[in-house]
Length: 318
Ligand code: TXA
Ligand code: MG
Figure 1 (tube, helix red, strand yellow):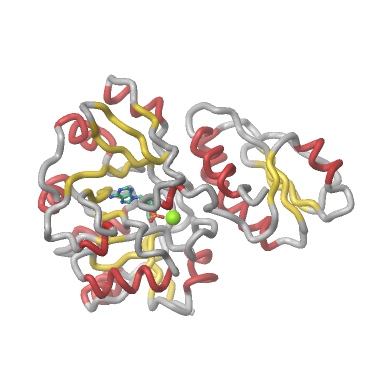
Figure 2 (figure 1 turned 45 degrees about the vertical axis):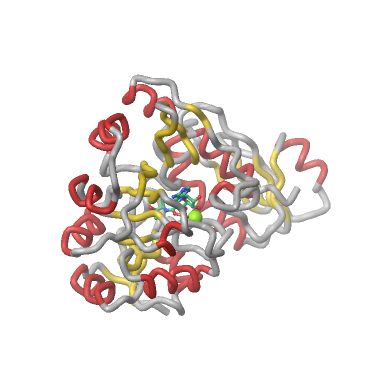
């Protein structure tokens, strides 16, 4: 198992040696390596069992540093970055050659993000290279929102996990790009479309149907998935349908009696509380004695849209 602690100097030393360290962010834990070192980046793909065509996000701690890695930063995106960073937003920008091709899976753009977590920001400030970091889970499985989640699955493969507690947002960053003079959202995430539209004072183009695009498997139809079969729809009807099985229920607000196990995303109906709980609850249900998992869509506003996106992909086996 990996060592778990809060020693930034140790994390820094390992990263400088080309090793991997799991890092906390406000969204999910990342599996970080030196983004400028192709060998370190390759070991990220290996540890996650991630296909090489799935590009990584590069994390840094200031817009000035970000500008070292990109050819240009369109003004509307930079204004948005200034408002949101550090925060749950990844921006696709044309990369300089300095960023190895393996990071971006050969794409001309690189996803850049300044994460909002004090430990990771201190770590990034102490480094003279950015950190490539996908979510710290085996490819396709539920993303980790606590140090222990990382340890359970990748603990034997990495030396150190920087423990920053439970992730406050709980789902991955929203990914945006600037194309044809419009702001495009490529992945729904921890910054809602409503907030992006308010801050940028423009309607965004939703460009989420990337499932057939092998360059963006974060948008694959099946992703973020528990190992147990999970079904989404009307909870009462699904309970009738699977009445012969031990059922685990993930509901939005409602208490559902007489199930083997239940988790309620947000008893008060708050999509932010729900997103914070989502991946931890999915894990708990997956590890429970339930044989089949049942869930429902949450309201389509604020972070509800991103939650529904994750639930949809998690139940694709249907
Ligand atoms: O919140 C997050 O974004 C977390 C934390 C650790 O920062 N990271 C994360 O990384 O979710 P990952 O690797 O699990 O998802 C990144 C996704 C990829 O699957 C890909 O779809 C998209 O970002 N991506 C990255 N670079 C891209 C690029 N240049 N063009 C298109 N999509 C890109
Ligand atoms: Mg991921």
